Image 1 (cartoon, rainbow, N blue to C red):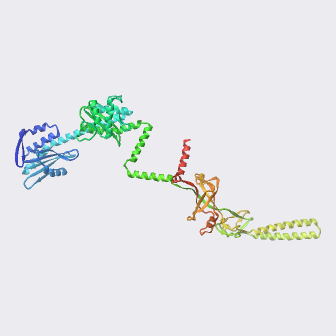
Image 2 (tube, helix red, strand yellow):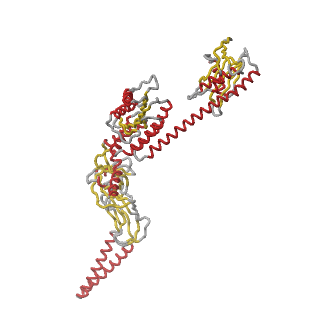
Image 3 (cartoon, rainbow, N blue to C red):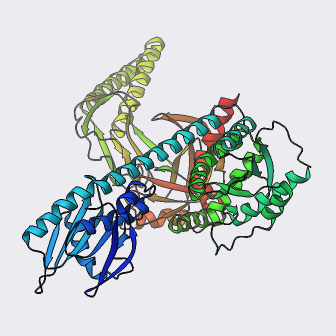
Length: 621
């Protein structure tokens, strides 16, 4: 094939000639991907026979496919879109023939990792041999495009590697310095060197405005200088709009305000300016202002935005570490207010608001504070029945819990020995009386006195025996209930004089013993009212009144309890004694003493707060 040929375009069966083009020379001299594609596709179509049209699709950065070259030029080849899509999806060549013999062939450009394009040819009346030749020639020519794709991929990788290297270097320079000023100065110096800038300035946010904090190639600067103030105004322009401001403007339809930036550029004599905010989260930490002669390219702006996203958190950490306690507290409070008032996490904030309202209600709503404690019922008066003399138990019909009447038999002691002793002393008395009479008849005064003394002794012993016989039966001293005592299992056993056989309590007079924890005893006073609920009578609450607070504590189960005596009203005691479920001494339950009004929050937490107050006093001292 000759190196120089005349470009012929066939449209609707007609051929028109244009100026001659050397596609091989254009292919060899191509410097861009567009130039290479514009030379490669016509050269391929000229080398093949019976080519009606050709289309080259390449992958864009957003993942879509767009025409990179069309042959003949200015031809609508949208009808080749379906076969191109099939080839891209299947990642293999697709051939279609119609009834008129027209053959369309699509060849995907696959680099191994991704399909980066496709070539579609429309052949006129191509037989199998011509189609095979076209496939082979297309497969051979695709090497140019694959090589172009590989070189582009390597170039992009080199660019990303170079950016990443500079990014890491800049981040390390910012982190390695001891304070913020040195860190900012190191960053602006490297930025000025990397982007070929005359000067790079860094402004910091202070009170909703921006002030210049660092200038490249300058350790110190005059904050009151005119150019510094103009630079601060230009940075405020980007800070207020929270967007990068570039001069000259890259987009014709941009709506950003650039008046202050233009004024600074005129005063400083700079052709190209870029003001870029440094955002860390929702806060603008500062603003970069870069100055140079050449306009900033899109790649430069993308690189600057990436650097800003990386260095903004670093600058924020540096500033946070150096701020004083007052500023740190104010910033923390402002951040908390922003989090509370913004629209993020509505469910969590609604729950927090409900919790706060509930806490406020508990802290303000007054309620009756009642000191609870374990309670036991005792008789107001307790009497004991003791053994009147030393003897043996013969009968014991009464037991603990029995309700007895006054004079009712409780127990009987054995009286055989007492009866024998009575007979003995009766005989002794009779003999002494006879002797006394005989001495009186004989007028023997000595014998009379001796006999009279013996008679008196016998008479005294007989009275004692009769008295014991009269006390053999142990009876109830009053109407009441047997609180303690069960001798049914001790019949015939000996008892000593004065031994307690039974304890009795009346049924119409009670007292309640409350065991109040030492943590609550300070709230209990004599005369306070309360209520008693017994375990055996859970449906009834008996009113009570504190009668006495003993100053002595008793240790039980690892805690100290104070004994508090309370009394029931007489009418309540009678009602309880006459009810179907009668109150009995020894019953236990829960008693609550009213100790005034407190908030619900205090009632539920006062023990913990008291413990915390005690422990803090103990640990701090």
